[in-house]
Figure (cartoon, rainbow, N blue to C red):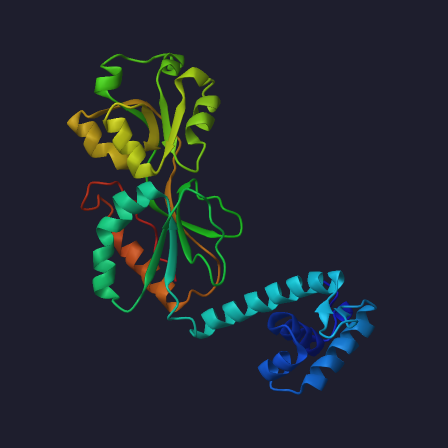
Amino acid sequence: MDWNTLPSLAALRAFAAFADRGGVQKAGAALNVSHAAISQQIRNLEADLGVTLLDRSGRAMTLTADGQRLADAVLAGFGAVARLCDELTGRDADRPLMVSATPSFASAWLMPRLASFRAAHPAISLMIDPTAEVKTLGPGGIDVALRYGSGDWPGLEAELLVRSPIALVAATSLVGDQAFSDLNELRRFHWLQELGTNEASEWFARLGVDRDERRGLSSLPGNLMIEAARQGQGIAITARVFVEEDIAAGRLRVLHEDVRQKGYYLVTRPGVMRPPLRDFVRWLRRQVRDPGTSRDGMQVACPPPRT
């Protein structure tokens, strides 16, 4: 970046206030200066850029097309800076902690444990977003994500919480006790996959198995997908940790298992954590500190302490 080519910060600030508030008088009030000062700063900015930013032909000044493009950029930039400053100074401590997790992980692992977090931190408000969509982590938005994978998310920090292979499972009422040495034999069954993902299609494609379009595919929230599998409605792909009890009880059979080492990761942005996030991360680490198993039998990782 060539810092010498950037316009005056004061002029950009005045222009951003105009775009945000919709007029020079309101912008002046927001910045505690006169409306004439706002007008002069915007004229200075136009002269510096050699671009007309405001249409002054009508009774009220409006943004030109170029002005709108610049307004979008400066408002996004100033907004990100403001949100980050709030995080760093703790001014946003009252903002709810936003957690993104897959429906399966949220219902089977996180929810049974949240009572202990609420007991330890009653003043922290939580917003749990149960979605398979990979949400962007950013200031003022998602604070932390609990994601399945190998831990490789560029630009983010990932710490293993729960290790689990992906397993292909089905009810014994659907597939019986037959051994499926050739996975192409599974084409005759209906397939189930978690809503918002392509795991079933992608996984079978990697194994060289093509889905029979005539058998259809159901995409369901993770917890409903597992319940559908228990009822014999189809074969499902899921993290094995969520169906261990079903496997042990004979309700579901493991037809195939991915031997690659994957699991659920605690994913955060680099840098200083705001206090509610710091408390939540510490609590999560305590949940997996036991190198054996958690109270519900899920295999957990024991990550090294971080400072």
